[in-house]
Image (tube, rainbow, N blue to C red; front, side, top):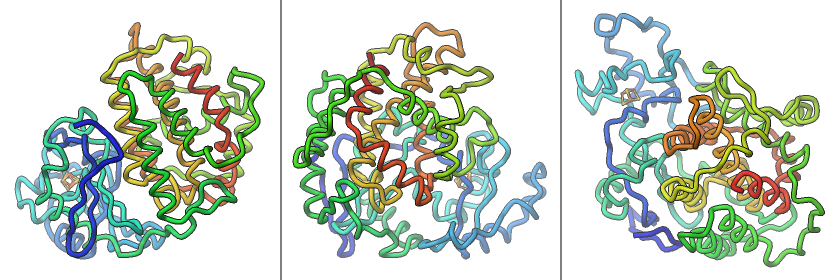
Length: 407
Ligand code: SF4
């Protein structure tokens, strides 16, 4: 089944649950779900887990310091109160040889609730709950397993867990806007999204950049045509903005890999002007030109992964409004286009770093996983949101960058 704006909807206790077609997942035991974030726990999770003395089984950790209380901001709109601190390598301390120590020794029911939820991801909106899956999982990256549309009983159970942990009405969707000064009703948004998804997924053989442009054209259909750019070459601001996003989403410093992403608008804007736009990988720095001169791999499997990644953000409504930093639909969609460019740059740097002559599927998988982790924990302050609206409104900017990245 291929991707489209069509999806299946079931009723779960009075709430419509919308399930995408063409997305598959079955647990492959990769253990990736247990990487990259401090595992949040409800009070009951914390009481149950912290009551066990792990010091004999796992003496490498100081269990008096392995849990922390969440701040008010971190636990807002959830029933989480604590978190398990990650190890210095960024994984949950209970993950031993890719297996969960709690699950193996004490039983599945002892694990924190969130562990049974992952990689399923629910987004509560005015028209029901939308399901997607996290691209941190190897099976999701490879689209391997049972179609989500054939997992309805599992989904009902996962949704029950989600509803236990996340408060109702925790997401604000009342400020939906196409652009900063163009409010949209929710129904208007849904109609637009159908056309956007159809334009983006249509034509398997059409290069992804052209499908991104087709989606952007849909969003501008009823707006005055933006002034055409006189240049097709990425300018200083294009490269500086990309380099700023790259440094935050794809940091080369391993210590930053497991940290949340906080966009400080003033700092971000200052760095755009003061710092040269470089892209770091390992111990090396690359220019935008060096990375985009490296040939891009025209591989259908890579296009498929990038398409599913972007599609999932759109279907799940994780790219605008209450789904992402209260951005407008246009800024949110163009941010997704920027993620594609970042994926190209980072995967290319990875290929160069290992001495390869072309970008491989593994380079892309590693990059998409990291992007998925980081955008899930990205927080924009008010200045950042205003800056993004300004920079990301321009379809010309998206054309200049993607034309160069996927030439
Ligand atoms: S408690 Fe177990 S399942 Fe949960 S994140 Fe840690 S290792 Fe993974």
